[in-house]
Every structure is written in C-alpha cells, then in structure tokens.
Length: 236
Image (cartoon, rainbow, N blue to C red; front, top):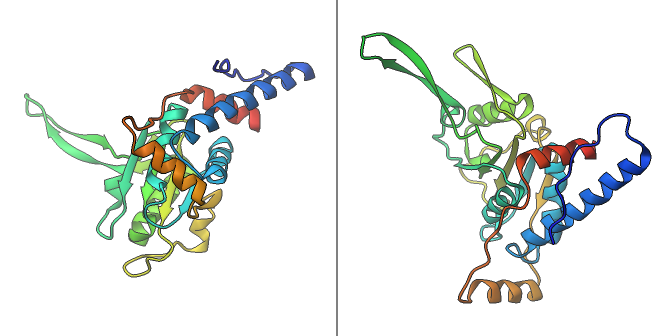
C-alpha cells in the first residue's frame, strides 16, 4: 500500500510531529526508490544520488558512457516524481534562445503589432540537458545562469521558471572532439556529479529479463510536484 502524501510541518509543531513527518517521508521515498528500481536496474547508488540532488533543491551532472540509461533515468525520475520533463539535445549550433525562448512579432487582424514571448523548453520542472558540453560556452552560460537564478530575462522582461525547477545534465566522459568543457565556475552550479558505471552481471541479467518479455516495465506516477516541494522543505 502506498504511503500517504507528505504535508510540510508548520512552524511551532512539537518534536513528535516532526519525527512522524520524517518517518512518513522516509517511507514515501522508499516507495519512490522501489518504483524507479523496477525500470532502472543495477544503479541503486545512482538513483539515490539523483534523489538526494533533487530533494536538496539542486541540479545534477550525470556522467556516463552511452547506453547506461542516463536518458531513461531522467525520464523515470520525472514520471515517478510527477514532474513535467523536457529534453534538449545540446549541439554546437544550439543558441540560447533555443533553450530560454524568444519574442516574435505578431500582427492582429486590426493591424496592431506586438511582441509575444514564446517559452523555450527550459520552462518545465525537470530539464534534461543532454551532452551539455557539446554546446558553445555562450549557450552553456545562458542555461547555467537560469539554473542559478530560476528565471530568464528576454528583451528586458523577466520570466520566472516556477517551482520546482531542476536540471539534470549529461556528459560522455570519453568524447573530447567537438566539445566545450565546463569551466570550474560553471561546474559549481551543479550540486553533485553523478558517475554511472557499468552494472554487474546480476543487474544485466535482471535487465535482460525485464526488457525481453511480453511486457516492458513502465514507470508510474507516485508523487506530485507539490509533494516534492514539501519533501524539500522537510529536508531543509
């Protein structure tokens, strides 16, 4: 049976209430880990670190070779935690406006012209920045600034990103040609670097059995964005 949703403890509640909140949160997070584990096999430590990053209100940098389920991990986290997820494939020709959004000039039926802001993919609750080191430093900087400030400014107008807002970026550790390594100051925008290793033989067997049967395991929503925010406040 699923645990009951977490409600943030108001100021002034007694110690017993706080302990009860923490125990329910621990039970709820155990359900979350189990739900993710049905889809992501042999990466329990990676899942734990990713959850720590999100519960701490931060952003994560996931480093691993191709085929180690980086994309699937982010998608599964988004589904289980009840977050809206967008994915951006970073390339050398990607512009800041392709991520943040841009203004377009529209003309009404009466002939009146006005600018309308079209939101970019960053306007979500969980953004996957795939191969972030393939984008130019200018584009990287635009994303990392938004990560820090939780808003974007286009044509002098500020647009908030809402809460929760998290970025999980990925990198391939062996690809160097055509990449732009993140400088130390920008790496500091990430709360944690999460290294994904190859799973062991038992995990590979479980993965094979899970993905070659008549049905493939799918992630199911377990939390909602508001409950994640409550858990973050409880953690703090």
